[in-house]
Structures are given as structure tokens and as C-alpha cells.
Length: 220
Image (cartoon, rainbow, N blue to C red; front, side):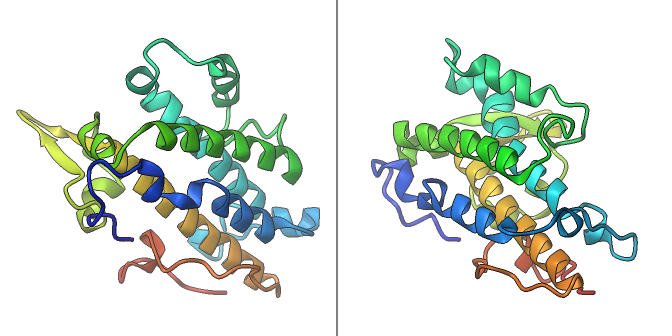
């Protein structure tokens, strides 16, 4: 995904139009009509099949809130948000990087929370410009995908002087990460479906982590 040609005063929504409704359409199409058995299929045979479709869905639904509210909230919303308590309740989950599966297990309920996160993303993008996306920074651990694949975040990651354990990431980098997470988890959902003899529902954009040469794209 190329974003470096946009002018600084362009609206941030022009960089990430997918967050308005396209991501929801992709995700909802992939889980539509699946049975509980299909949603819960897991296997230790492949690394990518250790999380079921339902758990991939829950992870995607919580991700925008984990990043844009939990990590960026104090910067973007210094006076809080009318939905802040709702966001906090959703993030108070005993499950790693997922919604509380005891409360949100049905696809319709999880998709409803996905919409909540995507609405938060769109409201932020609607209030920012390309320039502000690139100038606002957040301190983050120098681990994981940002430092592993800097080519996916041109100009969006820089070291914290004097502390090699941390980096600064821009708001644009955060949105790129969220977009790449969606495409990559959708790819996982599709290959879990194929492992069950099912077909994918959408054509996933050739963007994100899953298209990197070294990424595991193995199939059943």
C-alpha cells in the first residue's frame, strides 16, 4: 500500500478509505453462513490454524480499540470520549488480544463490536490530515512487526534517542498496521476455510504482512 504521494493538507480519510465500510464488508462476508463447527475449527497441524475463525474474528474486532483507544487515547482524546467507558469494558477481557469470549461469541455480536472499532477509526481519520497522521507519534516497544518490516512503514518508525528498547511510531504507521492486520487475518480465515473444504468469499488485497516473501503462506 502506497501512501507517500498524498499532500500534507489532504484529508486523512483519503489514505485509508477502507476503514469507512470496506473492511467490514470483507470481514462480514467471510463469516456469513458459517456453522459453529466451521467457526471453531482448530488444528495443531499448522501454526496458522491454532486460532479458529471465531478467534480471528474476535481479535480483529478488538484490535482497533486496543490500538486507537488503549494506546493512542491519551494523545488523541486528552479530555476523554463519550464512549470511553464502553471501550474500557470491551478491553477488560481475560483473553489475549481478543474480546471476552464469554460475552461475545456469536458472529453478529462480535461484528457489532468490530463496527464500534471501525467507527472510532473513521472518526479519527475524519478529524486528521495526512500531515497530522505523519507528525503525531507514540512511543512503542522496539519489538514486533514495526521493527521487523520497516519497509512497510516508510518514514513512520524512528528510534527513541538513548533507548534502543523503544521506537516512535506515527499515527499513519498505526493505521497501516491495522490495515495490514485485517488483510493478514482475513488470509488466515480463508485458509482455515480451505482446510475445511470451503472457499473464500472475497479477494483480499495484496497488501500487508501476508504477502511478504518470508511470510508463512502454507496451506492444508
